[in-house]
Image 1: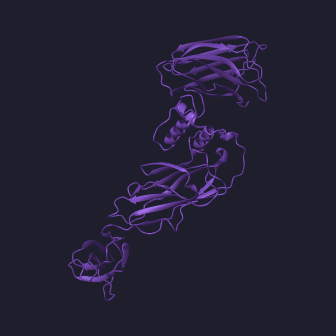
Image 2 (image 1 turned 90 degrees about the vertical axis):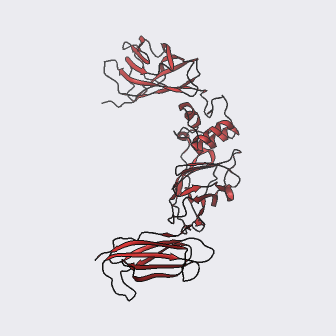
Image 3 (image 1 turned 90 degrees about the horizontal axis):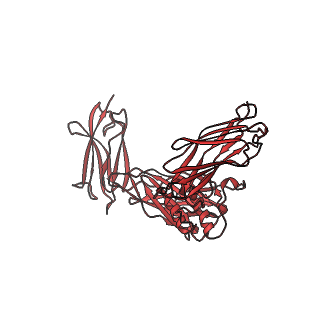
Length: 458
């Protein structure tokens, strides 16, 4: 069985509404076997509301019977057959030219796929030749890499379109995505933004990723310095630091967070990144941050904080758990649009959240034997409050005092081992636990009181 080395393809093309455009049908049969092609049959499909086929002509590579037909709207059949002496010799390039007329009513930025529905190649003795196909796309646009807004120029307006797309403020058409993907890696990101800035400033082009020489680049690191990331009074100032041996021309970060607990605030650039430009957008627990500079300058190599991402608490009156925050993605652009590999370290937050009101949580486990834990929260007050946590039996008799002292703001826990004040094990059944607080004295009058039930089993 012969390997499928022959390639049948239609390269992409560009046009404008109402214009005509010629797309080529290419065959690359320059293979190890150098099989000549004696016959060819191709069934192509396309959007007939987008464009109309006007004509199909063979190229000099074909010397024999050639014909084409449109049996149904949006369906084109091309066939040719030759004698053994006239077979298509080993080579590469177009064998046919297809002329389309684009519908004047279609919109710039739209596109249609020219799809190979079926292809058959035969050698000179009637044996099918294995092949693979590559569909083409007819775009409505200028065909200029970087011309995202399709005005025929590559300028700062195109960079703005790309930034808005990365920040998920707008969507791209197929052509706009192609134009914005400057390095041809099937993604539009900070590498492409840096590339288009270089083009605008005349600093060079953004070469396709596949053409870049494989040069070993030491990985960078991104983390949040643990000594600085801490909740205070319902707010988090989260510094993000990068250690890199290479200058960085742009940074793209995606932070994940719990949107039910946290609300992002405007981030601030720091340190060696303070001269850069920052843009960002958040929604539904996803915060996209871009750092770049329209004048082409870089963030110098080094180590230290480059950004502070701030959060405020939602519903902080009853929340004392640390919410989820993570660096979901990080993309660093180096010189010449090269990607700098990066290691991402998890975020470790310090400090409990300071609740704005008293909270008495349900004990756990419940039912329990022999011990259970009771968690309660003390809000920030002008003076350190006196707190009492007592256990009662079902008829209201006091069994045990777990807490009877001043408590600082924060989340606290107490454990009951199922014993009374004399150290004797109590009987199984329903018990009540009451949290009382008030002022700075033992009288505990009026400020807060809450009671919950728990069950001791044997």
